Structures are given as C-alpha cells and as structure tokens.
Length: 115
Length: 116
Image (cartoon, rainbow over all chains, first blue to last red; front, top):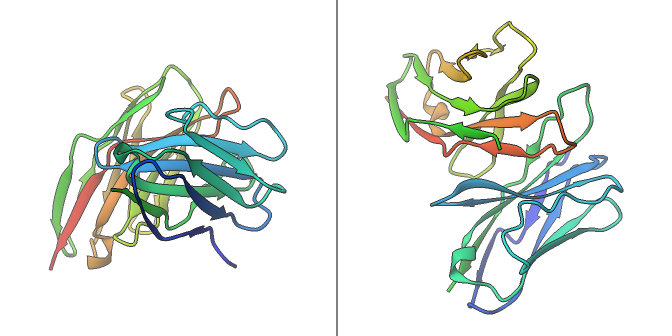
C-alpha cells in the first residue's frame, strides 16, 4: 500500500513569508507526528496527533508554528513569518496501534529553505 | 527528560565486514522502547530494528542485531556482512511508554560509509 507522503518535496521561501507543509499519513493510521531535522539540532519532535485527542504540542519551538489535522487524516504544518533558523527538513510520520509497539512510518520529508 | 547519545559521528566499514554503532540513553523509566532507524540520502527514515525494554533477549533482524544492556543504558547496533546499500545515517531513538506521549527522542546520528 501507499506510504506516508509529504508535499512539497522542497520549498524555498523568503524570510517573513508564511508556509504550509502537508502530510498524508498511511490510510487508517490514527497517530501522526511531525519532526524537524536540522544540521545543528538533529531530529526534534514537534507535535503529535492521536485520534480525536488533544494534540501534544510540547515540541513546537514558538507560536509561529502551528499544525492541524483535518478529519483524522491529512495534516498541515504552518510556519508564520518564517525565519532563517526555520530552514530544515520537516518529517512526518504515522502509526497504528499494533500490539504494544507502535512503529512509526516516515514520509520523505519537506526540505524548507528560508532565504 | 530522556536523552539519547550517539558518540560516533562517522564510522566506516569494509564491504562484508562487521561494524558496531554505539548508543547510550538516559531515563528513569523501567519500561520503554528503543529503535534504530536508517536514513539514506533519499531522506526516508526506515526502521531497522526495535527492542522492548522488558525483553531480555536481544533483537535480531537478518544481518542486524542489537546488544541491549539495560543496566548500562546501552543499545548498540551490529551490522554483519556489510553491504554497499547499508551506507546511510543511522539514528538511535527512544520512546517512552508513560504519559501518553508516543514521541521519539533521537540521537544525533552516525554516518556509516561502506567501502568496496
């Protein structure tokens, strides 16, 4: 079946502009995660959605970052007033409850460059 | 908060040889999961192997095996009979079983080069 897909693959934007990154999880997966991968910080957790529960937003670095998940499926990560330090690869993952171990399946990521 | 440390930024191995990648972690929890992920240049993170902390037996997946030392909080990955396709970034990751959060905490990664 289809894996996690993300769009766009690459995005170049000017400092101060808003951007939206999209994630399509594997069909039927109830959990969705966003991570950020940057050269200096490695892989960092941003936000986690599980079904209809309130999301875990503890990893969002500032109030310029927000995410939503519509209909329990597609998710959009929005970065407002982008800064150069926002340049990174943004990875999305999804998982389904399978026994005790919920394997996270990752998408190919969106490389964001802020000029 | 949990932390994951990979002390080897880069490693290299000859094709067909064996290599071990190190990972240590810090936690006060007794039950958790540990993972090794592979990230080739395509950026796609691929799960290599996972270990549940309550299991004493080390996990094995074909040429990949782990040495899980719970008391020492160590979780190394051994790759046997290395192949050119094993060249990638390898990330060690920790997942808690408490608090409802299923986020992964990653180490900074080890870049593995496989020499022909």
